[in-house]
Length: 224
Image (tube, rainbow, N blue to C red; front, side):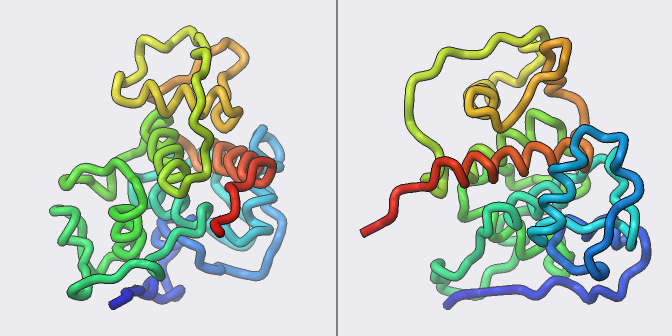
């Protein structure tokens, strides 16, 4: 049977709104954020807001410098790629604890983690939803999810050199390199990727928008 879980009520505290603001819920009517003008991700944030992929933490605040947890990152990727369980059949109704030992079945992120478990994410069974996601981890999960959907080409690529590549987790080298080559991830002005830095809401929005722009420019072949 197919399974879908509703997200928790939108009547939540301000702290919960911050947690859920990447979860596809409509916090309020579309309004301009007054705290993104000084971030280079401004255009990406606005574009994703207009698509309904992200919301602010309030009517006028996006909080671009706040870091993302693992659960928030997974929810953002699920939203951006429109992943769901509609084509999946289950012998029994799944619970998030069937896949992740320290997750909670009644948590707002439960459905997103179940979706992630069948859509190519590389999450360990002891995945911590509250873990602060790093730039390399977020990039890795995003690229894997895109590849699982058949949305990335298979080709040989010349690796891009960057000054802090020795800091990169060897398990993420391939996915980060593919993200860089395809223009989904970017280096900073000093040719650094900062793989171990915790990813902010603004950085995640920028990478997400780059990924969607790539998909718009390179649609997957239609299945006949």
